Amino acid sequence: MFSFLERIPLVTKNLLLLNIVFYIVTLIFGSRGIQLIPILGAHYVNSPLFEPYQIVTHFFMHDDQSFMHIFFNMFGLVMFGSLLEKIWGPKRFFIFYIASAIGAFALYNLIGAYDLWKTKEALVALGYNTVELNDYLIHNVSFTYNSAHEGLLNTYFMKSLTPMVGASGAIFGIMAAFAYLFPNTELMLMFIPVPIKAKYFVSGYFLIELYLSFQSIAGDSVAHLAHVGGAVVGFLLVLFWNKKNTQSFY
Image (cartoon, rainbow, N blue to C red; front, side):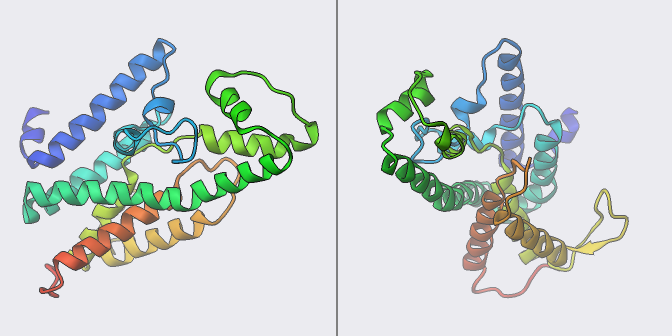
């Protein structure tokens, strides 16, 4: 275990350990009835539950009901991030990681916060008081409502209460950079026993996430827009850094 960690570059290793620590702490607190995801996950900026620190804390949090969420993110971090850090050095890689994660948060909010605002405006037009709505969300204070508006109210509450968590935005940024620098490197996927070049795999994955971003699928709780945002920021950043050198590594 320790020999494995010693082979991972410094920033990648510290990010890996931080994510694991946050995940373990989340599980421990959850077993005691204290849910950290609603506190440290990222709510929309116009949700009454949003706090500025969530912009950073959310990308160290992962779904405590799904081990595969953190597993695949950390697998991608070590697999692709280690190589990028060796090429760029720790400072540039750290900047890149944070920029991709915040880019994911920004695009997630660009669309989602607007939808939340429109929903809230519709409720205000129907005569609902924003203070009462916020008191219900924060303090669970009951209020009088028309049952005909229940669907709209539920939409507002769900959008306000559901936080975004995970390092996926940053990982998509890392994958985009890897595909740009190593476009012809062949990847063997776990469920597809055929080598796929990085440029095709990442591009295809990006297009799927872009498509899913604008679909309403029951039970789909993935923040696809965050994945798209992280990939776009990661690609633009590596493109800018590499603009004087158009040659890829392989």
